[in-house]
Structures are given as C-alpha cells and as structure tokens.
Amino acid sequence: MVNQKKIEEAVKLFLEGIGEDITREGLIETPERIARMCTELFAGMDETAKNHLQKTFSVSNNDIVLEKDITFYSVCEHHLLPFYGKAHIAYIPDGKVVGLSKLARTVEVYAKRPQIQEQMTVQIAEALMEHLRPKGVMVMLEAEHMCMTMRGIRKPGSRTVTIAKKGCFEEEPKLQDYFLHLIGGKI
Ligand code: ZN
Image (cartoon, rainbow, N blue to C red):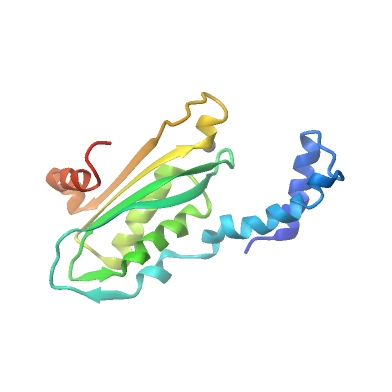
C-alpha cells in the first residue's frame, strides 16, 4: 500500500531541495496531489499477475494467440521518469487460454511499479509461462524513455525494444519470425 503521508513529506523535501518555496499558491497542494497520483501510478505494487491469469478456458485449437499494441505507461526506477509505449504478447496454448483483456491486465501489473523495461518484458513472459502453462511465449515491448529524451543524451523519438522468448518461441526461430511478421514486420 502506498503511504501517502510519507510521499507528501518527501515531495515537500524534494521541492525545498530544488530551491522552491513550498508555501506558494501553485505548490501548496502539490504534495497531496502527487501522493494521490502515486496510488494509481504504482497500483501494480499491490497486485499479482496470478489474479488475472488464474481463470482459463479450454481450447482444442492450439494456434498462436497474439495481442498487439497494448499501450502501457511505466516509471523507470533509475530516474523516476515515465517510459511508455506498446507491448505485444503472443503465446502458443497447450489446451488453455485466458480472456484477452487479461493479457493487458498482466502488462498493467508490471508497468505500474518502479521498473526497467528489460525486467518488465521478462516478468510478463514468466507470469504467462507460470500461470497459463502454454507451449511458449514471446513478449516484445517498444517504449520511449523520458530519461533519454528530456535529459542526458536527449534523443526524442528513439525507442527501446526488448524481447523475451520462452518455450517453443525460444527453440524455433521460425516462430520468432512469425511473431515479428504478425506484429507488423520489422523492429
Ligand atoms: Zn531512466
């Protein structure tokens, strides 16, 4: 659970730290506002993917299931600045599927916490392997990182692409090609 009081105190100290006057009108409610916002931005801290992936449906068709262009917003744990973009998730069922919205929910669980993109990609793939037990999973995230665009080397528009492959996707390059083809071709 987010500790709102602690966040409010921290934001006050932070504002003082950058030389601000925390009593001026524009900032007076900022600490409380940020504390409230954190319950939404970091809602994934109190959630597990299991909640969303435990209800499965039996299928006889084990063809690929792909959900692409799942928009996500996360916060990089090195700078506490946003990174955001799209997630693409594919799996080959082994007799079981989940509701399609559950894939997006799983992305949210891992996006809404301090995060690094590489780790988030693997966490999504591992959660699906663990709870759905498919023949294989492939996850790709493409995101723009504000810590790359508004500071440091300042490269607006550059995207970071990360991939995680498990099971048959790891073993069969043809399936990886098929995945890339389905999500629209090239990286
Ligand atoms: Zn960063």
